[in-house]
Image (cartoon, rainbow, N blue to C red; front, side):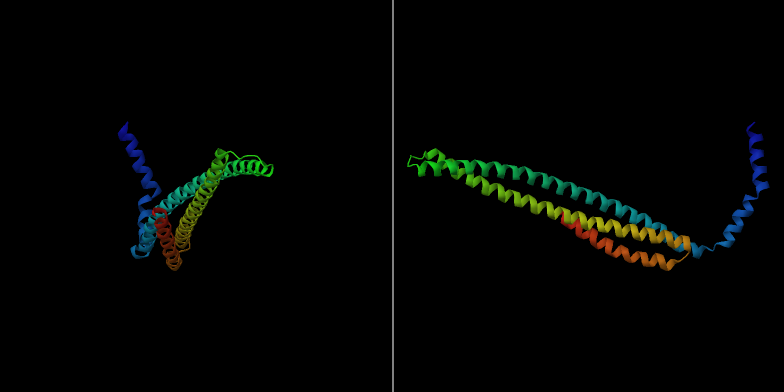
Length: 191
């Protein structure tokens, strides 16, 4: 049974003339011409890896920026609460003074404590705002790198389709910018 199947396959291959097609294709396409296409494939593979790494770190940076924004929002709520409490105590003390009544020392101490909390919370809010902004810039640099790498990959594939090696060479110029933005973004991310 297996021998019969093998005979059928061999006869079919001979009938189709696959060997002749392969030989004809090898004669038609010189080895040198295909060399640059191998370089396109290699660089496209490497650029895909760089693009994936840049995209991953861009996502991390965006996540950290979103966390900083969320923390800034929480601290802003603390600022509002501390300001409201400070205002109530301040109003109470002002009314008591206007009526000529004694002011409780605990209220004055609490008012000063809330004023200090407002200042501390505002500083913390600004810190989170700066951190979030810095992380968004890092994300932007890495996203630009991803875009430049993708353009280079696209131009490489297009160069193979239209058989224009110069188009692939032009696409490699985008890699320089992509590497620069990726290095900038990764440096920002790591610091």
